[in-house]
Length: 174
Image (cartoon, rainbow, N blue to C red):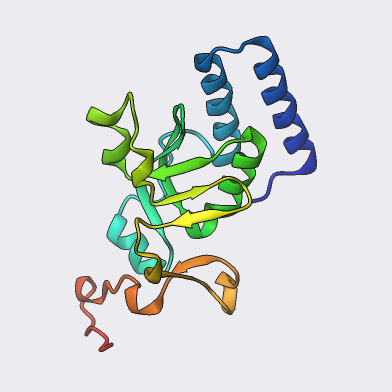
């Protein structure tokens, strides 16, 4: 889902007004959280009631369950993300906010790390134009070259989730 030009203008106004009103980090984070909610949906979003079921349906998608979306200043959103499907939203949000965004696994942005998320451990980051994927395992990912995922970031076929053993089918040999 792409944001309409009207919705983008509205968000740009919200961010500009929020940044004019206050220079405090807390207020800017509040504005960034509001923008994230409008772009990514409500915090706590669930893509599926079953992680293995989601991986079975979308074996090449890069799903990050219970993710945290952060800036250098802190967390602005949390919930399930499918980077394959949500990458454009993340890039748009980074451009709107004028800052780099980091997608973290749950443990890197919650619990003991709530106050200071470990952005250096991001599974995905973007400044709106460029991106980084993985924690050094870039050979796991590629851009799909055909089909409905063409141009999208996906797991390479040899690393795709093979859930057939959970569904009573014989595993494919690789």
